[in-house]
Length: 236
Image (cartoon, rainbow, N blue to C red):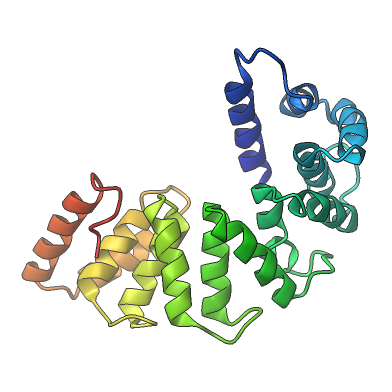
């Protein structure tokens, strides 16, 4: 999870607890994290995490993973994520996926990373669903499984995950795990390109458009108009 996503989640936690009769024990350290007071946040999180609160364990893992007021310590982050994940914490489960597998110091091999990601994905965690799809497509942690990759990416795409939508577009463009289909490739690449971070999807879509027929373009645009209001259920 990128730090900006962490802070967005912290903001959401703040919204969820606004007006509650009793404040959650992690509200104060979460507020300190939002305000950039990392030393205070870590001091407050430590006893809560030691006491077994999964939310505090996850947040403490984030502190160590991204060096928020401390030196980055992937081993410590991994340990706190594991303790939270053992209690079913979805965000911690997703962190134990391939997040640390790019030679960042995690002790988790791809097989274990896939196992943790699957646990989070089955709980409905959209980022974990995307991660599982990518790992299965690449054969990380298991033999390559394009059909399985498609299923997980489709689940994430249905929840509006732009990365998953862009990958589905690539799969349709190249006929990977699905029948090659320029129209569906254009549709999913267009949806993936809705994010400013998906410049690659926009470029692929524009290149694809150069050799699509007017009839194909018309079908693609009709599908786009239909699938957005239907929560992506009729995109293919």
